[in-house]
Length: 278
Ligand code: HXC
Image 1 (cartoon, rainbow, N blue to C red):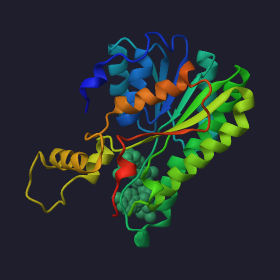
Image 2 (spheres, rainbow, N blue to C red):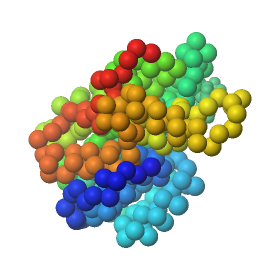
Image 3 (cartoon, helix red, strand yellow):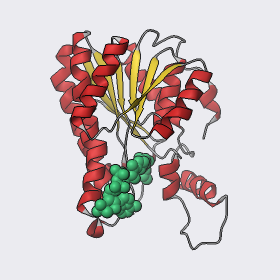
Image 4 (cartoon, rainbow, N blue to C red):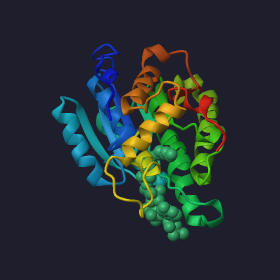
C-alpha cells in the first residue's frame, strides 16, 4: 500500500552514498520498504532473511530501480551463524554503517494454549534476534568509529494486546535493549534507537483484519475493515505505509539524528494514544 505522500522526495539524494545498511527481514513488508528508501538514497543494502524465496524478487526489484543490493541468508536466532554472516558482509564490503533489526514473527494465540515452543519462537526471532544482530555488528561499527542501529518495535505492549503475549513481551524487551545498548555503546559512537509502527497493512496485519474462514467470501472485506478501523481509531485517519516507517528509519540513520540515541519513535498516526478499551 502506498499513499500520495510516499512519492515525495523528503531526503536529499545520495544521503547514504558509500554506506552499507543491513536490514533483517528486508525481503518483504516494512523491511523491504526500508531497503527501498535506503537504496534510493545511495546505500548499498544487504537484505537478510531465512527464506531465499523472499530475497530473490526483492533484490531484483531493488536493482531494477538502480539500487545497490545484495542478500544474506540468516536465521537471527542462531547467534553463531549471525556472527559469521555479519562478519562476512563486513569482510566483503569493508563496513556496516546501519543495522535495521526488523525481522519478526508472530501469530494470534490464546495465552492459555500457547505452546512453549510457540512462545520461544517469537521471543527468539524478535528479541534474541535483535540482540544477537546488534552484538555481532557492534565490533564492526566500533572499529569504524561508529554506526547506527534502528530496531523495529511496536505500540501494542504499551497497553497490552490480547492473544499476543509472546510478541508484546518481545517488543517490550526490544525497547529495553534499545535503551540499554544506547547507554553502553554511545562511547563508541554507536547510536541505538527504535521505531514503533502503528498498523501498516503488510500480510501480518492483513491477517488480523481478515474475516473468519466461514464468512461469505468478499474480496474487499479486508480493505473495508481496515478503512473502517482507520476512520474510527487512527486520529490521522489512514493506515500507515512502509514508507512512513522507512522515513523515520532514514531520519534516525542520517546526520539529522546525530544527537538522538535510546529513543523509541512512535509512527502510528496517533493510534495508540486514542485506542479505547479492548
Ligand atoms: C498457534 C502457532 C501458530 C499459530 C506457529 N505456532 N503458528 N501456534 N497458532 N498460528 C507454533 C507452532 O505450532 C510451533 O509450536 C511453534 O509456534 C513454532 O512454529 P514453527 O512453524 O515451527 O516455527 P518457525 O518455522 O520458526 O516459524 C516462526 C513463526 C512464523 C513465527 C511461527 O509464523 C514465521 O516465521 N513468521 C514470520 C513472518 C511473520 O509472522 N510476520 C509477521 C510480521 S507482521 P509447537 O509446540 O507446535 O512445536 C507484524 C505486525 C504485527 O509483525 C501486527 C499485529 C497486529
